[in-house]
Structure formats: C-alpha cells, structure tokens
Length: 389
Image (tube, rainbow, N blue to C red; front, top):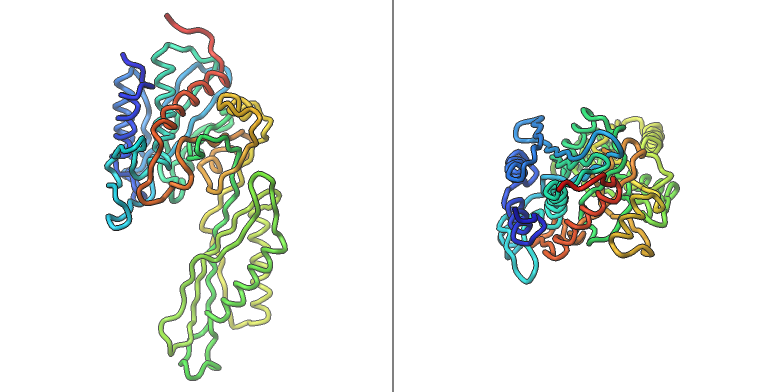
C-alpha cells in the first residue's frame, strides 16, 4: 500500500477535510469525523467517535503501548463561517488547488494541521513502528466558539496520564511555545428610563457606561504586564448595546470586554478587581445597578523553551538556534494543559494571517513537510522499540 505521506494520497485527503462543511455555528463535526474514521479504517486503524450533542463530537485515535510517555496531537474539526461570494473568489469548500496552494475554509486554520497529524500517525502504523510510548490524535469539536469538544474531553479523560501536547494551529511552520490568556466579560448597567426632554427624571445607563469604560482602561494601565515571548496584556471594549430611541433616556447598556493576559496576571484576581471598582461607582451613584458575566476564560499557555519537547521541535525544524515565539490567538491547549502541568507545542503548516480570511489557503509544500515533522517528533519524543518486518 502506498505511503500516505505521498502527495497523491495526502493532498486528496486534505481536500476531503476541507470539502466537509464544519462551519461553526452549528459545527456539525460528526460529518467530518465520519470521513476521517473511514479513511483510517482503510489503513487498518480503529478510531473512536464520541458524540456528546447532536452532530457534535470528538474523534480519538491511539497508537502505541500502555507504558512510557504519552504524547497527544490535537486539532479541531470545526471552522469559522464561510466567506461570502462577494468577499472571495474561491468556493469556501471547493478545496481548489492553484499555484501550489489549496484554497478553502479551514485550509490554514486548521484542517491542514489536523490532516498532517493524522497522516503522520497512519505512516507510523504503515511502517509497523512500535512506539516506546503512546500517541493519541484528538480531533475536537467547537474550538472556534467555546471549545466544547476539548472541555468534554478534559471532563471525561485522565489528562494526568499525558506527558505533552502538540497543537496543530497555524504557525507558518515555526515553533511556538504558548499564547496569551483570554478573559471575556459582559457588563450590564441598569438605570431608569425617562423622556428625553426630562433627563433629570431618569438614570442614563449609556452615559453611566461611559464612566465604566474609562475606569476599565485606566485600571488596565495599572495592571499592565509584558512577557518577552507572549507580548503585552491588553483590554478592549469591542461591543456595545444600549438605548431604544433618540428621545428616551436609556435604562440599560451592555458592553463586551476582551482582556488578554500574560504572566503573572490571574483572571480571578482581575475580575474581582473590576467588580470592586464597579461597586465603588455604584456607591457614588446608588441608582445604578450592574452585573458582570464571564463569557470566556482561557488560561495562558506557556512552555519553557528549554523543555525537551521544544528543543526537539527546533532541531527537527532545522532551527535549533532560532528564538521561540508565541501566537496571538488562543487554542484548545488552554483547556487541555492540565492547569499548566503539561508542556504544549504549537506548530502547524498554515499561515496565521490566513485564519478566518476570505480565500483562506495553505501552501501544499508546507503541509506535506509538516507530516514528516509530526512523524519525527513522535518518534524522537516517544522513542521506538523495534520496526516490525
């Protein structure tokens, strides 16, 4: 049987993944998981699909023995929404190949990384390699919205049994050792409505929210932190909703706040501080009422550059002397790293700047090379006891 790393197998396999519509919402990852399962069965590998909601599932493939280290390759099955015909010149699920690139939603983020990880595992099986440890390939649902797949897995699997995780998100084939944390808050301020000609009879929630926004930005400057790899913390107010019409004093205003963190910042402490500042405002303006809702909480991911996993990745990539980097986005690694115990490598063939863009693409050469990278990384990190003849 032909080596799955060969172009005539690897490229059509990626095309099949892109042609399966897993735009999230709604996700419908079960459709793609079935495609992957059937492909693996052709090569004598059994995978497990766990459907935890209608059409939503994780797929898990395991190779190797029960002893030794346990390495996880992780990628997500879902993508963001497709681009419109007006925004792009290629069909989002066409997997069109042109000038050495494959175009389609998920080509970069991150069906190319997931496909390469799966093919690396199949290649090891094809050659009869007996790994010195265990290799798990986990394909998750929902990473683009709420990481429901990773959360489900973390709640039902023994993360303590893992030794390291590799996330196949797009890094332009560079070694990344982590990403910022993300804390999203929704703040609702309630006042009292009145006629616009008699504002003194009301409590203007929109104007009150302006004071809260100013407070948030000044507070962010107080706790601002910087990391040489991950960059600088930030706070931005990215959505606002309030008021009903021009001549009515608004009694409600809502903002969504995006906070990105780096060590040593802690999300629980930040949220407690923000709540305390809001309480101070309410003390000065007792007619206001506020509510703080946490929309998302993704922890910082950071691995020591000297860790064996990272050093091995740099050597395999031919960049042993290269400086490591962080990525600007968050990953399922923030759910799966067992509260920071597990080392996490982020590495994928996609271009980060292509993520979520119209006419999203991946370089086919980079995709093919990444299959060998993942394969060699598993061999070096887990070791092999013998190759069956």
